[in-house]
Length: 278
Image (tube, rainbow, N blue to C red; front, side, top):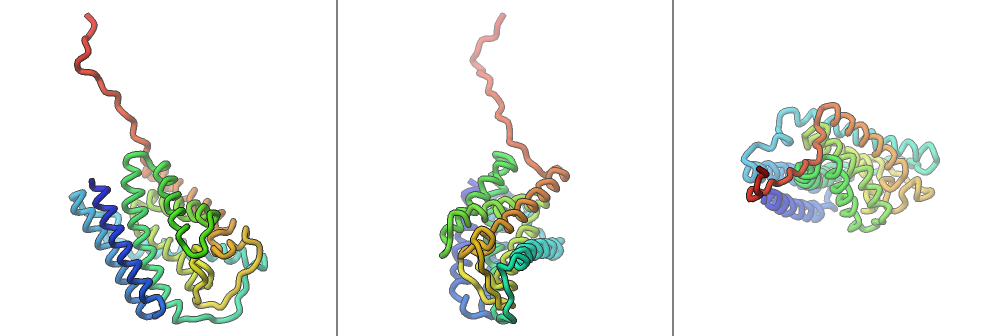
């Protein structure tokens, strides 16, 4: 039942914050304020429902070290997407035409913060964490990663290939980041850094939701296999490659730190009515 109550609570929060940020997306400053407020609300709801259903503090969103852990995650996310763009630029598939919209980038800070926190609370804080307890780290990583990818099929320019790419490079990788650190702050930082770099800095399409006007005025062209087409660079082989590498690194860290949870073994039941041999 704790899974049911936690899932219902965070899904209500997910729907409410998503509606709020979408309603003000055309106003950059309101997007900043509403997005950051939505991110804070998501953390509070998660901490509250864990405390009520599990009778303990939600240590994976503890305030101690939150800024540092989130900051490291952001650097990883921005660096990862920057590496994707560097590959596209070197291949002649990405060009920069000048300065874009600094105001638009400000709004995207809030919008991407709200989305990153809400999605990490739902998919890593509740789904992955609780499912992992019953079936182990590796199977939980695959299952929740696939669900995370399929969720993106609802986006405007979504494709099946794009959903598969998201499952591999983000769903698997972010679950591995949680397993390695046992905190939500790192995957939140990675998620936000990746999304903000895509839209707020490099002005590319994000998960098939259309291009956003960020800091740079840019254009992407070339084969969909390398650029991701209308889905954005997240659908490129570059993004998948970097996502796989980072997933392996996080899983190695999780294994080294003893954070990999094995699949529980079923204990055979003994029939108490059986007659013992004489």
